[in-house]
Amino acid sequence: MANPVVRLFLRIGAPLTDAIIKFGFACRFFVAVLRHSPTSWLRFSLTMREIWFAGVLSVLIIAVSGLFVGMVLALQGYDTLVRFGASSSLGILVALSLVRELGPVVGALLFASRAGSAITAEIGLMKATEQLAAMEMMAVNPIARVVAPKFWGGVISMPLLAAMFSAMGIFGGYLIGVQLLGLDAGSFWSQMQSQVDFGQDVMNGVIKSVFFGVAISLIAVFEGFDAPPTAEGVSHATTRTVVTSSLVILALDFVLTAFMFRGA
Figure 1 (cartoon, rainbow, N blue to C red):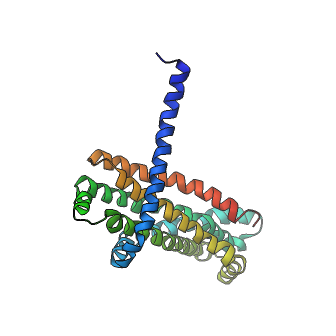
Figure 2: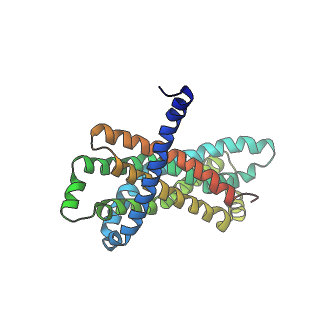
Figure 3: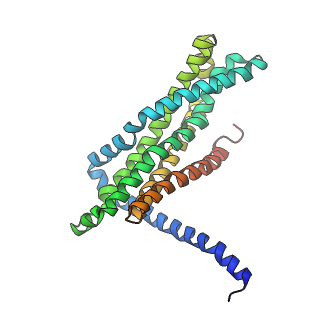
């Protein structure tokens, strides 16, 4: 019988080893997706279909969520700014909070929940019903035909949805700040325009959302492609997509923020 200490290390090390092995498979899968991407781009209609599926069908939840987040942000921010006699800076607070952080991060979390899980479920069901195996039998590469278009559809959709989230959030802040609380509309917009830097704030937010789009799309297609071909396996893969994507988004946000906005 093995030593208890050895058994403890084995118990701890086995999941870690499995995670490292799976990460290696994911990296190799990512290289395969990139290698077959030129083939899928030649049939751009496939990618356009995935942009519709992942992006356009997510517009409603992104727009409504962005509107309410902006309204809540304006209500909370106004109470704080009034204490310091700086209520006229509400527009700056709302805009910077949205374009720097909330737009990319909350938009990505919603995107992972709605589109990422759907991508995993679709690929997983195609695997369970042997559609991917049938493609291979007909000499059609499933990564080029199915996976790469879904991956690029997600990567392209994510920054556009994050921008929409921020725009709707700023509009929600305007409704609360100007229309409900009575702030001057000219001051609201002019201070926002003068203090929000396009290169430092807006473009860094866009870069964040591109990183999030790559991460979510890769996790979604990999989990679907790697899912056991059963109903339970697809269900677990869908859950892993949402959980893993959420954790990766938050970790990436910390790293990117440290590089982009440190000292800004």
